[in-house]
Length: 265
Image 1 (cartoon, rainbow, N blue to C red):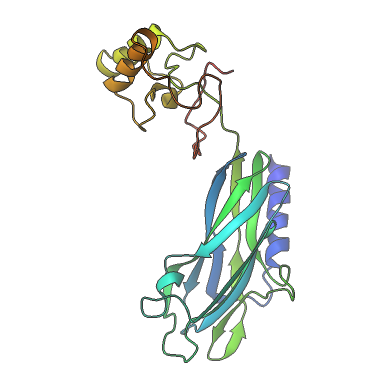
Image 2 (image 1 turned 180 degrees about the horizontal axis):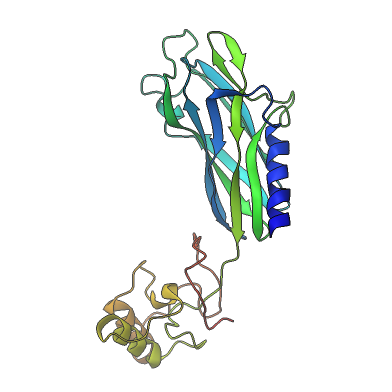
């Protein structure tokens, strides 16, 4: 594990270009987070401005395609309103499997700037998880684009290289489950309805796969799910939605703890 962390740290340093020549008054950082294998998740690019007013910036953000694929990047909340509540006068984003590049001029006539402040959200990027494990996502200077895009902030007409801080993405496997299988025995029958009632109202044992209790697919777990199972099994009611009747994952499922264990193995 220690060796893995050292390799990851070295990769981040390689992406950010080390620390030489980077101005500590301006810090471009990438957030960390979980991204499901085979699913999608987001990470943000953020800027701390502890210096003078900024009139524009450019940067690349790189990822390892063996672990992640970048599928989209959009303006963050602060970029989208940076010009007096409006988007920047010039705003270019390019998407690559291995990351994205950004070029921004806040106002072509200099009427708006980014004042000193911290936690500016510049971009929100979407990634697809490829392989389980921890991987670096970091600013990359002169790597992506044609010509390659530099990491700079523009202050008083001069380009300044900010300090670059990478983040990590934990690509996590998502356990498949069977909707309605509250007791995780691999089947959906009367016992699952009884389990739900017992868990919710009689201090019974907790399901090892909370998502499977949502038999009616409304995003919650309540008495209606028990009724839904009884109706399906005995009154010709509708069957649970996917994943059913085969094990699988649900659309948008991105929480690695949605199932600690399930009847799907």
